[in-house]
Image 1 (tube, rainbow, N blue to C red):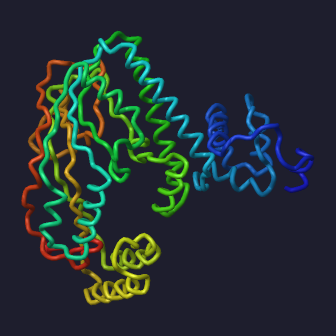
Image 2: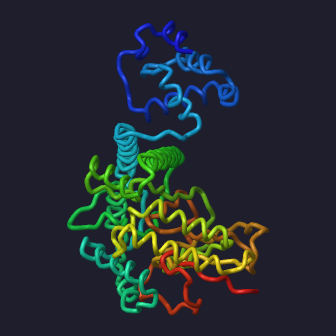
Image 3: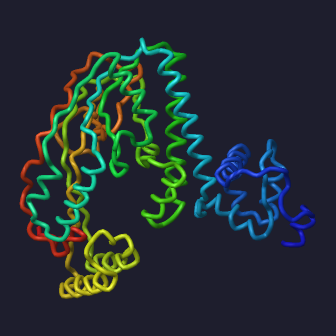
Length: 411
């Protein structure tokens, strides 16, 4: 293999004169594969044939490193198991910014076609984020700390805007990825809202293309960031070293849109949900053991490394006393979330239980939802003020508060 590479490329470095980040190289390789429609065939070819296919494909203006040491990386593009670099992040971040700018320009060019409602939520400052983080930690150590729960669920008012002000709020929200005015990077900025677009066919097609492109670029950016490091803290440091103040979720979450739908109603509300997962005894033990690998991420608690290891041993011993047939629940209360419930004038999925006859979709309203050329005579319920979390049903004491693990009730 090495001899053949040298024969193809005597310089032993590259085929062309300039290089791009791996993200650009990956993008071009994928375009070649898609255009030739030979994904399955390429995956089964030997190394030399794979390289020759990439080099001989049209429009290869990018650098293709084919040294033997790089083949594993090229193969990684196929399997999506490679680790990304700072250059990958910069490249994909710029791609996302370009897609955002194109959409914003199209929206500003035709604001007369937009009617909007937005609901502004209170800003979470750095001080508030620190207080909430401390409350979460105290609840973990002392699960029934009602005072700390009150901090996390304090009521607040929302500001309802409509018309041109709501349109401007929406455009500013779409292009906002960084914190400002003492905002915290720990919490994404949410703007629940509904944008109704009534336009001609050409503009509808244009918006659909721009939204699809933006969502694709955001998904790619999310993937690039996740591959920077396995450590959450390390990813955070890398991203904010390159782009200070960037709010990860706002740069990577997709923008919801619906096109030419017959909508019966659109209702906003606040929702509290508990994430519930069933685990076997062995799965709980494995989850406890995995905590040791992330002990560096528990530096915000009072545990030392040795103290945390001792806690792991105690938790493992507690679970080992149960029978092998025992089942456990992870019950984690999620923060209050603004939800948009859209009811469509079409039959529901026959597999869905319940008395409802029409289709309903519940959407996490982190950003304004766009309705493009949809029926605009639907019933509308705006988002009300947040009144706090209602008292939840008793679920007993957790066996392991740190992991929110409970013994599953029989029946």
